[in-house]
Length: 391
Figure 1 (tube, rainbow, N blue to C red):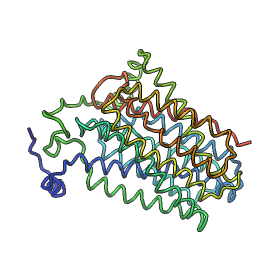
Figure 2 (cartoon, one colour):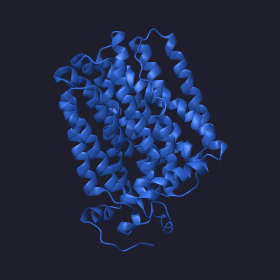
Figure 3 (cartoon, rainbow, N blue to C red):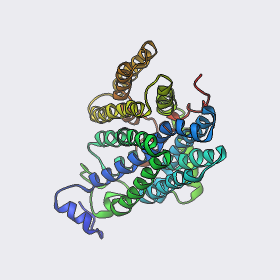
């Protein structure tokens, strides 16, 4: 069954090549989330240069970046509703523009207040709209089969952003200053916006297709008739999920995982490596190593979550992750032991997301699955509000 609608020449070309357009949407979403991940990870490289140039205290800089993490998480549930009401293309372009505004404003900032506003509020809101909620929305709309693999691929975009951008940011910052590094990020944001405008489509039925692997058309998504209902919808879904013990179990485990990665490692690893004599570029390489192993782990987990019980997957993920973190304090924090611990953490890092979605008590359907992704993203970012220094 197909739906005859007007389609672009690009869409027709892929169709003639036998490529389901859902994979093109996945690739476009992957690029969007990867570039946004570069903006999320950039503060780890900026910490020392900002302290050196402006003389700001590490605790104050950390506080600004902590606000970014809070908004990054808090936007998740509402991003799902915005994607449903306004569409993936519009929300993605708006989010990329927000991130670009925050990054661009950094070139002329001179005070901590501006750092809080630009990197705390503006970048936090923009990156929150392009978090895993976007990936979950695309996966549930465009794929009936191989959905776990698709979510694994899109989760890996965050790791790819670390692998691709962080070492480059560190090298550019050390050679030509942190503004040069942010200039590269701005260029990538502009390129990504152009790709989204050119290639992104909302739903397969808009271009005469069924979701990948579907035998019949999915039921239409329930629209949100007003902006007020858009804002209230995530709260209603949260109230429904909160009645389930499964939700609170997932809440607690995801909270701890967010504390040990997003809040501590991603923000402070590069800076604390300097205290142990590890150069910034090499320290950024450690973060990139986490991303590289995370890339493998997330894709593998997407494949596994299509085949095995998510509860057992989470059991192994959390257990092995905890062991790798317990190992780190007993090392000498030399490069070799740090690589081993970070790679172990990376390889079992974000894989938990796919079984979490499969275990979510919020119900079926694209909007509810996307809201689930939003709530768990919010939980993951809740603990980084601990902006103290590294005494």
